[in-house]
Image (cartoon, rainbow, N blue to C red; front, side, top):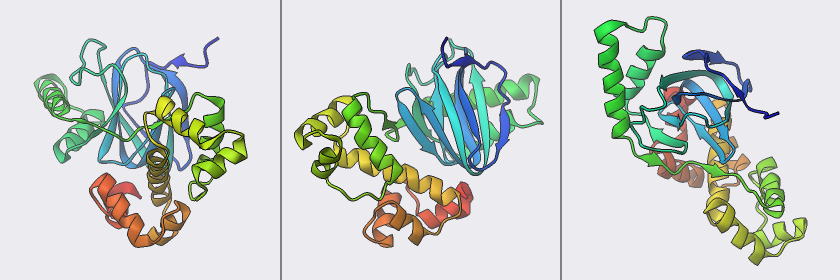
Length: 249
């Protein structure tokens, strides 16, 4: 029996406590998942995303997925019939959420969602906004090769681990050349790119839990708080401190 179950009646808005999970399931409709506050980790068989409130995950119909909350979070979702795919994407993707789209999601997923013509107008605005939203490179791809999985598991357990790929390879019984090739084949990323993505995702979860910027910089293996701030700004277009103040925490 598949570990995935159909879940066609998921609420359009759901509060989640820190660490709370929504277990693996799938839908027969396309979905847009967006945290109203806090941070959500959205996992699929291909990998995982960690998304703050100014990001959303597009989940095509039939894709198995699970969620986990960091900080006091709120899951908001919009459902679209399987034939309505404004992004024309067959795979999950992360999108930037404009202030307008965020407000429309809040209205459509809220308890006072309108009906009739106002509802159709808001739905059209959401579709128009989605058509203009380019996918963002925020996926942390999952490893399929057992040797590479051993390495990624070590790093996921301690994102601040500073060991080189050669030293990690020695720990799992694989050469640096082999692991470098496997990173490219399995994830489409180099080892440094994958580790940077892991650290940024981990940073989002720690910031959502209320940790200081200095503590997060150390926990994610950055050489200094300023180096962390710059890496975060380049990835997300804002500073860690501002991210916390504006709803990531």
